[in-house]
Image (cartoon, rainbow, N blue to C red; front, side):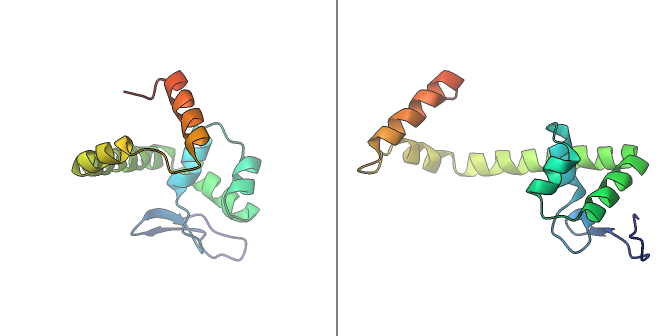
Length: 124
């Protein structure tokens, strides 16, 4: 495990996976940001981490790249399966919600959102 200058571990395995000690932030959160092209400085600005914690996470990822990447792929697959399950469980309710008219006074915002969805090809 990666450790701080005082010898304490900074990366630990919890029930959530590989986690930065003292936080609820997993290495998978850090990898998500790296995969999106974020620099370490941007990650530090977004996640509540110290520079030492982020450096330990990056060092751990680099030192254990094959195992961490394999575990990351598993985490992504499990998340996709969970998402698909709940989308299926809630398909009818989500369809009902989609048919509701906009709240009074929010028609303009709703129309703008619909326009953007249309441009992005998100409407079915």
